[in-house]
Length: 148
Image 1: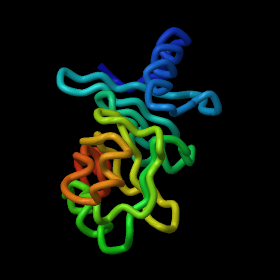
Image 2: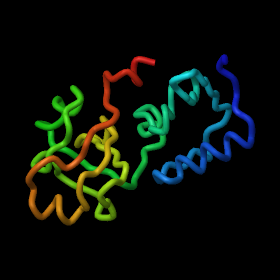
Image 3: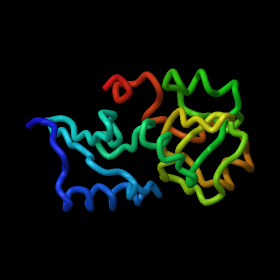
């Protein structure tokens, strides 16, 4: 199937999926979809914004999401950009509403989103212990999604 503009019904479904992650696409128009046997990819202005149920860094940076965010120090950035998971000592600040299993959006000190991931623990446990793996990274710069 080739890439085409989504219908109103598909737009509503996509909007509902993204609202689960506190991402509002109300301002976006003319979203396209490309379905293949393996992938479902939504595009806005030629950039992938939603890939197999993962909001992409293009979308997160474009919309400047402000919930479920984690800010990391400069030392953590190169590791995350290479696909490493986020460890608690690298966290500077974190949304207090984050619960284990939530999709989270990771940004550097300059407010550039560099990755998305799944929280391994609740906010309290991560910030209390400041030890161990805090987030499993599922999307980062230079991964296959960004190559699209």
